[in-house]
Length: 119
Length: 119
Figure 1 (cartoon, rainbow over the protein chains, first blue to last red):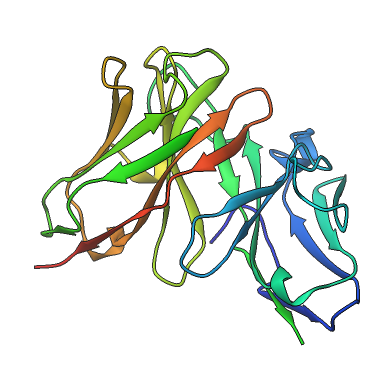
Figure 2 (figure 1 turned 30 degrees about the horizontal axis):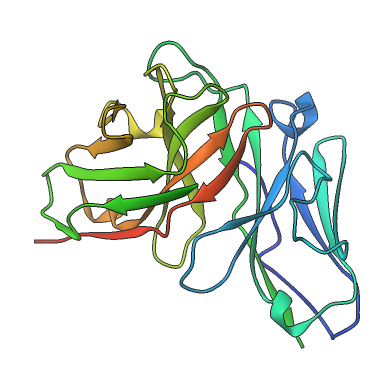
């Protein structure tokens, strides 16, 4: 059971717009912590797609955008392309869990991932 | 910056899983970065394991309840993970990643190391 909730799958036709959601709680997204998005292609490691809720790393096209409101965040992909397929994960920080060890508190939390299919 | 995991691919139940992440292109002693482990069970989502700071402080996922130890070796520019009393549930691809502390993003990631727990 992931701390952040994502729909298991979304789909869209080439050229369309799709939206993926990421729902958290008052101890993570709702507490004001940023949301980040990663894309994972089969057999490869996740790669940062969006950081700090709505910022794109160099090389990520502006077809990808992020936003946040309340306890939820969204990733929007416009002009859908076949090679956008993959698994998309959201990630944030949660202040509600005490560290087992001393020194640092809080946890990184992930969503369960959304599989994007381009029809 | 590149990260590369290494360690045994097969671990017996009740034994200790040990992995090392070798970092190149950046110093693990640099400020602004922590060094993280994340795992992904077959067909499942991402689970944050923990991280070690540039000064050696650690922060673990509470769900691992005392089975986890992270360490680092600045002279070799690498950090390590030890997970004790493993079971089949610990079978996963283990990733190491750099945590950018100012934004709490994981970037970049290593390619991942599949560890199977089986007798």
